[in-house]
Length: 339
Image 1 (cartoon, helix red, strand yellow):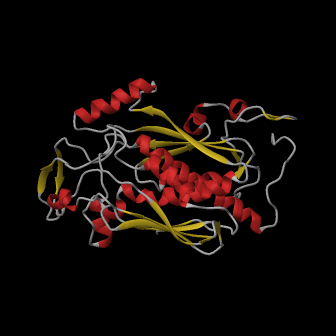
Image 2 (cartoon, one colour):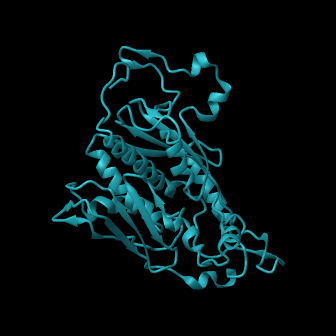
Image 3 (cartoon, one colour):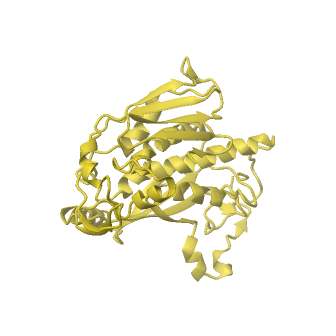
């Protein structure tokens, strides 16, 4: 599936080394001021080539709005956004056409479809997230107009929590021809109580679905997450007072519905799969071979995954807000909600 969302629905397209990547957004309300300048800063945060610690691929990632905006405002019709690839190098992947790269989707994609784009993984490449970030920027604009903000930060890299140590870990992995992963956190502020549904479309479940849909993410937790398994109910339960909740162990979601508190989600990001160290694998004929991945790759994807994670969370919250509006019961202040 290349479509995500219900009321704020996106369909993305494009490959890592194809002509372009883009997204069609259906359900964006009319009358919202929108220009390329609202979207570009989000793409600038994600794009490669800005740091010695990221891929040296030089992509300007300039976004163009093709439809859905008239005289600077959304019309309610589908928004089409496109980003043209400017620095693709197909030749970097010629020798990998018949080989399955360890840690990548090469093997599973071939097993499912019987054909794959070997140029950087095609649609399974991390570059696919360009379209998600563009769509997320529009969702973030919609939310900002309603006082809702989405931010993120790195908590650790390869087990290291000190910022200077994080940089050192990435540099060490790069110099060794290896890679490292880490943990990032996304927070939503200003979210009103009442978003989400109590059964299959729980807000936490939607967030987990969205975040796990990012290629490098291998785990998601909401609030205290796995730490809750080591707590007692008397500690984990968030006491309520006349001024609001006393704590936020639940991460801003109870019963699948937002409480009005800050929503907190964390993601575990795996090490970048493409590394220079020799690795064992097989080719399409099942013959064992050894490969070293050349080309332009991040020794750690965590810094560049932040705007992607923010985008996916913004899409979920915007969609939940519009879903709630269908019932004519927009989120409101409640006693004890802290809002």
